[in-house]
Image (cartoon, helix red, strand yellow):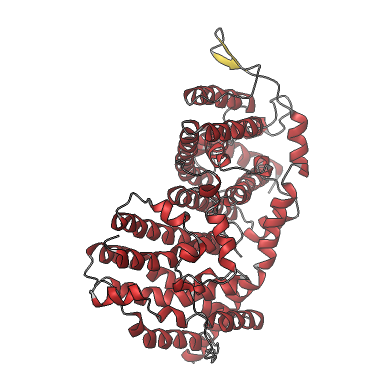
Length: 318
Length: 251
């Protein structure tokens, strides 16, 4: 194809996105679009899968049968999200095994929030309320993103995430209205998860590298700073409602702007965790890699069995 | 308690689901692939759902304000009446599948009969659970076949798991005193009558999976009387952790 022809295709492609048309797997797309989408969708899928670990950590110790069942269902939802996000990636010509390889080798990233430990039951509430809350703010705009399979997956993901968020908040309500010990547990969890949740919405706009291109492709509709502000404005009244205190002495309502002003985020901590040196990066990766390696003989067996079955059927047919 | 035998009988059934559900819950996020991870968690979820129905009913039968959580999480080790099979650890995926399969075949046969119980609550619970357990049995049978008739490595692992777990199968067909009373009242299932069909079904499937049916005639028992393997204490310390550490609180 000549350069001019490619340019022509690219113009048509961008025009389709501008008209809010969906791009489907078999449509022509620029290589950069394909790669960017594989990167973002797989990063999202990996986050779902690694995210199963900190919450899975409390399944055997959930305080009641009702909470145990709800937590099991929630973590299972996350596995499901991972499954259809990996499938959405596969429509762009990359295999799930390749994506796992990228995760296990450290080449692919996942959300840094899952590198923090879940040390008390209240962390299950804080993760649902804050982490899923921040995730929804990030993800709702993706229901209208330009790549069809991603947009459709996100519709379902967001419905479930919103349920998880309410479930997490409900755990916090119960604790905040419980005994002094329970309330203290809730406050402690909020103290530990608040700042990492704000970091989850990404670096500040001046250092964010992917924003402009992503905006054009509707992979992003608002900047990181706008999303963060939205999250804070939405979450602060929820904390107040249940008598918990946001651990930020600089947080105050700005009457003039109609938003909350907030304190400085510790970006050194953010980059430390992103670069692999958070409290649980190594444990999380070790858990994923060993599940994969220890499962190899099982996956091989399933393939071999399918072959054996096929051979038998073929023999019978002869 | 007026209906002590019924109470004990319900716990005997429910504890199997409780302890097996807890074991499967340990695997969440660590499965050999995403699909089996989801399936094992789903079976765990089904089992805990069943446990809630049984314990809510047991609480009513006890009539002393005991909640489902009190019953599930605040008994002493000797008061859990599950069979030894379900408390065995997740040594590897072959053990997880072997344990599941050996329990599912029994569970399905048991619930088929429990549907006919003269106790309408138990019969209703059985009718609801059997739909789930039919799927469990299909899932675990399929995996026994995949592993038995897969690679030499998987065959060896599956055979080893089956040989080890086999010793816990006979207990499934033992009767406690409460079981006997419940059977004569038309409430309970006579498990002794399920034994032949159980071993027949298991043997057929193992043949299909190119595995040998273990020949050992030495069996372990004790779970139904609350005498467990050393594994159970650790499982209970996780299960009971919150209720023991923070007593009398709502969650």
